[in-house]
Length: 246
Image (cartoon, rainbow, N blue to C red):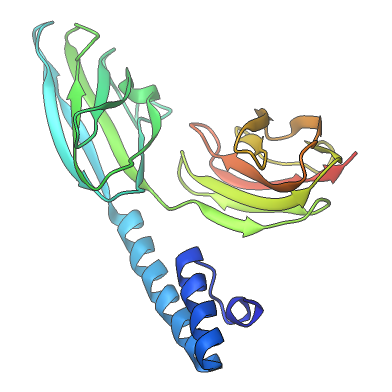
């Protein structure tokens, strides 16, 4: 595993393939080849996320009117719907409902505050304007594709750092613990508008709070914890979060 990681392989599936190939062949060149393949895949994905964006726009002239839009996405994609200011988004008090390829409702909220929606299936998604609100008015609601979650390994005592360039993005740091008290708090903590939660080895949320006011919290279970850092609807920009033992 170390040989693969040293050569830049980080994607879990590619890492698994790399370890298997190294075990069977003993060839370091295989790890280097897979690292190059992964870099190419990431570059292609980054291009897709940078350039995708659309706007749901129109005018509802009667309370019983609904407008529908359809967009295709891959399994595991995530989108951000809405915006913070009138220059970014204007929903006219109308809601936007998001339906999966199977017709199941994934979200329904006023368009400009709908936020992040995770898309579990590959296929065609439907966006219905004014399904519930029963109002009239014009609307202009952006839909942006969010980059994949960035997953990194950390340790208690590390400073978790990164930067969000779009709302709704997630960074995830994993660390090992068992029995300690941990906190993310002032001083030396920056991350305006960012939300943070710690998820235990059992997958349940241990604590959730604003970026610089989390804890102290007892990490009772022994195992791998996750710190999920969420840009939400207000958290663009850099962050530095000291993960302290207290």
